[in-house]
Structure formats: structure tokens, C-alpha cells
Image (tube, rainbow, N blue to C red):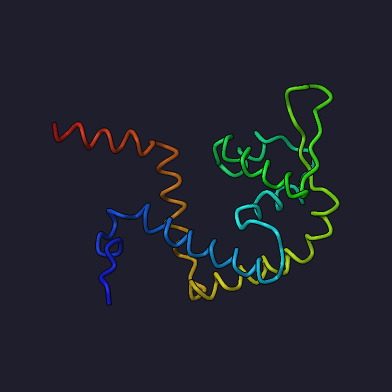
Length: 162
């Protein structure tokens, strides 16, 4: 059996370890969607959920809600729109702003997606042995990074060495 290099690095490869876990989960979700003939990407569910609760929102609103960079949300919205899951119109007050809502196609698919999302929730809980302590750690990391960026922390440590 091959040694797990990333695991061996421990905390030094935290970002790589989280990405690897995320990639594995997204790959498996994509695989199930394909088996069920659902033409949706795993990372779209957050946008679906936001638009279920609030229609006619801007890309900036979605980005703010998710804490994602604006360009990342633009990419997701473009892909979802190309598949026919979104309705996009210009804001009547600010012509530069686009207002996004779910299309009829998306609204028809939502009940099926909700069943899948619930199943995914259950699978995650099983994976975690129903122990949500990891969320406390992730919340703490998020908070600390909001207080002081990783860039600043990294640079400060680097400057100590030179």
C-alpha cells in the first residue's frame, strides 16, 4: 500500500487535504447525478438553495451570501443559465445589474434535487458519525481568517525568517 503523502504532512497540508476531500465528494455526487440523468453540477446546489428562498437577486448578492469571489459566482451562473436553470433579466433601476431567478425547468427539478440533497445530508452525517465537532473547528478557522487574512499571517511568519 502506498504511503499517503498529504496525510503524512498533517496540518501543513490542511488546504490540500480539505480540497482532496471536497473533490472526492463532488466527484461522487456528480457520478450519482449522471446515473440519475440529472444535468446539474454539485457546486450549483447553493445557488439553487439561495434562489429557492429569494428570487430576483444579483450575482453580488449570491457572492456575498456564499462568501465567494464575484468571478466564481459569474462562472456558476453562466453555466446554470446555459443549461436553462436560470432566468436572468436586467434590473429596471440599474441597467448594469442582472437579476437572477430560477427558471421553470429548475423549479420542476427542485423536488427531485431536494430528495438528493437530503440523501447527501444523511450520507455526510453518517460519514461524520453524526459528530459535528468539525464544524466548530471550521467556524473558528473562518473567523480567524476574517479577522486576519492568511496572506498577512503567512507573510508575517515569513518575514520573521529573513
